[in-house]
Structures are given as structure tokens and as C-alpha cells.
Length: 376
Image (cartoon, rainbow, N blue to C red; front, side, top):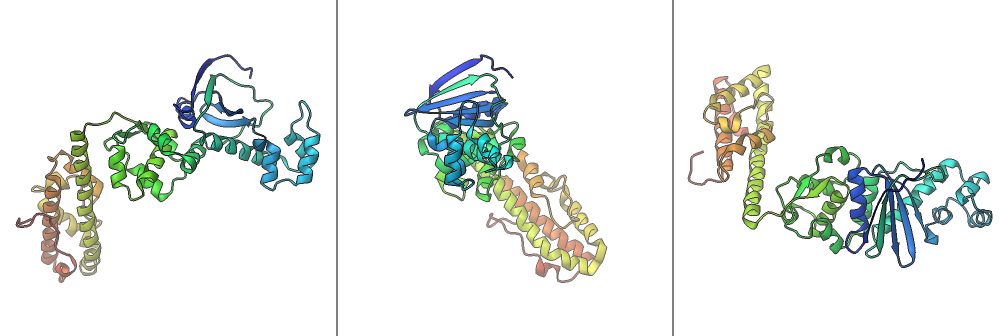
């Protein structure tokens, strides 16, 4: 493929880090060369349709021979001998294969490590210049790699991101609201997220600001922000418009109320997990029918919480309850769900008693309520 002249963009890494530059090509799936220079060093990353496929560096420590030597894949003697045979048109990697010091597969592994090392180093650069040439490039003289660009960028940011870089990547303010990108799910499978990182990802919903996500996360604020910035760089998250304080507070209350509703339903389900075996032991296969009948008994009065639900399996779908009460006025949703769960518990006891079940009330704890003085 012959290189063709294309759009050229230039800038400073102090204003747009390499992660920000790479993110634009990743999302747009463009092809081009990113060249970064700093303190007499030059590093170039080849990007093909948004994927990193190769990288070069003027740093002697980034050369393939040094990488193979550092990784223990060749000896010092093999390194020295192959280095003496380098000449125009004959790369050290090719020479190492011809001499039988490494296999073609080991050579590809070495090139992968070389490229990953160059990219990881660029993610740590805080100053310098960058140049993006949006064009095709010649591939016959390079080994193009199939690298997980998202994982490489994510790992690099997690390892070496500074606070100024992180904050800039999150819109420059903790009031920025983070939203999931339209193609986030297709990108997510390319990342190997830890439990903590998955937790931070789960809090991105288009309503919460960075500060609110930090308040709800169980890891440190810095670790949460670094994860969010890494997700942003990988194209899973984008920064929306900051909300005013009143809107932020209102949305935070709504989010907390959703969690409260989910917790109430899960508490009911835990109680049913104890009561269901008792019911099944005494009425056998009719247990499911009894539970659905109990739900039908209270459905009309509590339809706003119980619609689209069945209880025959012994548990309610909490996400459906959360969705059901979304139409209820904020501030009243917890009350509505507490009353529905209390009524459903009594209906289960009544239906059980009618069917001759004994001691069901002993294993089905009373419904909890946060409304003292009110009869649920």
C-alpha cells in the first residue's frame, strides 16, 4: 500500500497527552502515524483503523535487540554478533532468525514487547510535541501486530497517570458528568477489568458526576478517577456537560433511592429463600401457585411496585421493581416498595395458612420499614 499525503495535526503533549491523542484515533478508527518528540527522543506509533500495529523509537534501549536481551530471549554473545551483521535492508530481528537464535514466533513476541514498551513509555510523557499524519503507511518492512489497543492504553494509564493528566482527561473538573459511549459494550469485552475497576464502570450512568462516583466508590478517590480516565481513553466513556449543584443533588438523591429500593427487595428475597423450603416441604409442587396467588391478592393495591412480576420462583426481580417505581414521585419510592413488600409478606402468610402450612411466620421475618409510627 503506497503512503498518501493526508491531514497533519500538531500540538503539545502538555495540552493533550498521548492518551488523548490516541483516543481520538481509536474512536474514529482512523489510520495514521503519531510521532512524539521530547528531549531529542522521537517515538512513532503506527495506527491502522484505530488499532496500534507497530511502533518505532530513536531510544537505543527501545531497539529490538535490547528488548530481546533484556527479556532473556537471546544471550549477550548473540546480541553482539547479530548487531555486527546489521546493514541497510537487513534488520537485527531478521538476522537473529537466520542465525537460528530465535524462532519467527519468538521474534513476533519480541516485537510485541518492543511496541508495548514504546507505547507505555509515551503514556508517561508529560511534555513534548506530537504530530499526527492521517494517511496510509507502508507495511512491507514491518511486522504488524494484533494488539489489544484498549488493554494496552488502559494498563499504561493505570500504571503512570499523574493527577493533572487524569483531571484533564475527565473534563478538567470533578463536576463533569460521565456517560457511556454508544459502542461501550462492544469495547468492554476487550478489557480485562478487575472487580474494583468493574465497580467504577458500573457507576457510570450519564447522571452522576465524577465527584459523585468517587463518593459512591469503595476504593480511593484517586484510584477511582484513574480508572474513569482510563475508561475514557479507551472509548467506553465520554465526558458530558457539568450539572448545576441543584441538579446534581437531585440526581444523587434519586440514585440513592434506587439503591434503597433494590436493597429492600433483596431483603425480601433473602427472607423468602428461608421460607420457600418450608412451604415446599409441606405443599410440594403447589408452592409456586401459592406464592403467585399471594402476589395476586395484593397486586391491585400495590400495582405501582409489583406489575410485571411473579413470585412462583420464590424471589422478585429487583431491577423490575426499580423500573416500576421510576414513575413514582422521588422521595416516595422507598415508602411505596416497603409497603408492597410488607403487604406481600402478609399475603404469603395468609395463603400459606389457608393451605395448611404451619410455622411459616417463624421463618419469614417481619418486613423492615424506615417509617416509624406508620402501619405498613
